Image (cartoon, rainbow, N blue to C red; front, top):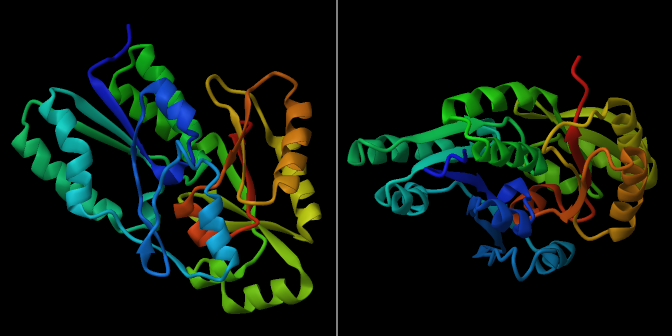
Length: 291
């Protein structure tokens, strides 16, 4: 029997397609992104490709992001608690932002205010569709009647078998955000070397490199081909910003290899993620073999 007393939350930087949010009744916390100091209007229903945001990046506008403030979390959570519901919040890596300090304060305050209600939180240690793939598994678990405590244990186990891997067109955005060194960005630009990056243990790490974007995409696919293993309710996500030729290439390769064993979803990188990785980004998220 479905656990209908739980409201499932994730963030906009999970890169979850809008139709899946609607299908599974998932609530989304919009993590703010800015262009030249002005907050970007996040509208995944009517602007699912975030083309205006990416165009601003290509026009050399300055993107920034900020932590979610306490009032923001309160605004998302309190109406559901007041309606007699509990909350299960499946978040991106808590190591990447100070937002979660504010979230913990809000949880403490709201649970004191609503003593019969509970806010559960589990850290996926991932970002982008690495969160989405786990949220979809959680949505399925809730429909099967699993308790929040059981689901948290499931996520803590399953997150070790999810790969988030990507390559960027311009390393300058990662340099600006402190994700790579200035020397690495300069060498990459001069030699057209593209580092292959992935999330591991909640942190961004380099796992390879390639000369040029096409070879980088083939590297993503080669790793996927050796490492992929289907899992229930865990689609493969192919993500891109504004280079459909790259996204389509990776999608076609992956779709052929998967051959119906898993759903393959092609989607766009959201504003709060592309603010850090820049235009021309392409990535893949999937369930990997257990080692």
